[in-house]
Amino acid sequence: MKAIYITKTGDAQKAFTFKDDNIPDPQSNEICIKVHSFGLNFADVMARQGIYQEAPPVPYVLGYDVAGTIHSLGTDVKEYQIGQRVTALTKFGGYAEYACTMQEGVSAISDDLDFETATALATQACTAYYCLEECATLHSGDRILIQAAAGGVGSIMVQMAKEKGCIIFGTASSKKQEYLRQLGVDHPIDYTKKDFVEEIRKELNDYPGVDYVFDSIGGKTFKKAYKLLTPSGKIIFIGAASQIKNGKSNILTTLALATGFGIFSPIQLVMASKGIIGVNMMRVADHRPNIFKHCLTEVIKLWEAGVIKPLVGKVFSADHISEAHQYLESRQSMGKVVCKW
Image (cartoon, rainbow, N blue to C red; front, side, top):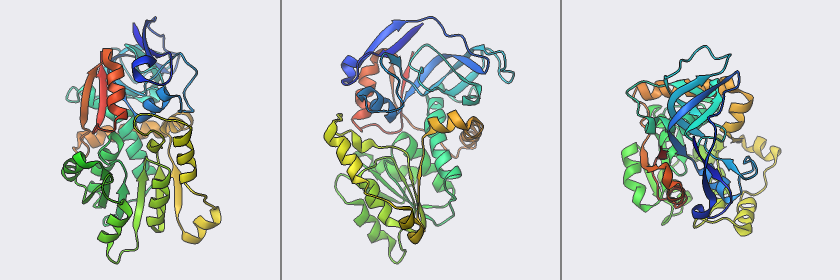
């Protein structure tokens, strides 16, 4: 089989090497999937840049979500059958023609769900579901802020929150504003031209702030958003995209990220009755696989009910993995970026 290895961190055009590997044998609790499509996530960009702490030493195969058909089963797997169409979470290893993962990270999909769209359900939809359902309790009329609302996770968050009757503020760049309106964002904000705090304050009237913030940017953006929270409000933090600027990361962007957050004390949180929650779905899958399985099962149901419709922004051939990475890190993408074999 073909597998795409990261053999050097940094520039996307120099980072990847295609190698021939043996098809992996699944462990007792694993399923081996013949991969049709694999998805890209911003964590992939960070790993390729050498700034993702979870990444193993080079050389290794990236990839967190795949869709395809079951090739082989571990001895303890009874729920699935060879040839079944599935989507799955993979903790690395997804950039290959075959990939193994734990059975709790796999869900069967119907013939109506194309493989490209299915890749958006394993990582991004599960992240959105975990944040909105496990970390928050949304009520109709709640004011919420979703940063990077046109992205793969953000766009699904918008759809789920809209179904619950929330009033949504969403940030994105200029060319994505119409897409935010189509998604159902009540107050789209062009962060490249306007200060999101000022824009939100204008629309809140007498309401004291926002009830929830879902932040994938980090740094100063996180600190500003925290100040917008109402008493009893929560900020759910899922990433640090601000660590990469103009497609690059260096010691200056890392320091700016770290210092931008500010300092928070538990006493400060108690007195303000505010909460900060960090979300890493890899950690959830590792330590509470039953919870991840629940999330994956539920997002399939949400897709079947028409509540969420993941946007596949662009599909690349696997041979063009470097171009796919460059496109994602340019922040010009909307929805899910996918590669297929």
